[in-house]
Amino acid sequence: MPNPKILVVDDDPDLVRALRLRLRANNYEVATASDGYAAIASAQKERPALIILDLGLPVGDGFVVLNRLQNSDALAGIPVIVLSARDPQTNEERALKAGAAAFFQKPADNDELLNVIRVSLGVGGTAQPAAWTS
Image (cartoon, rainbow, N blue to C red; front, side):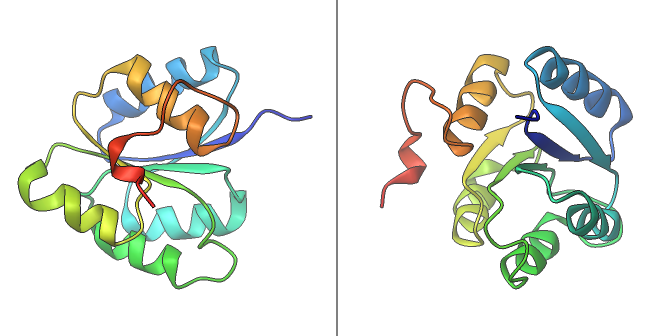
């Protein structure tokens, strides 16, 4: 069985590099995109198992990307974890309502992020985040 592919969407090359190293060390394949337009194109091409999405992107911010993903039959089922430096007070609830599975403030705790990735992919983890109440 191939390793799950994660699409990392962020315009900060240092963060993308660090996430790619951590994810690969945990047996994930990694694809990347650096703006909103590339995120949608890459999601359509790569069909990732999960997307890690920044909100502050050039060419369509993260909310535009979330909206496009949710309105695409082929992409709507992909879990999206928002990883953003934006104010969580105003953006966390909005991101979750827009379809994100979880919201992390940058810099994210690596163990927590990896746990939520595992839970989102249905491969275990310790507990569901509080934002996941049904």
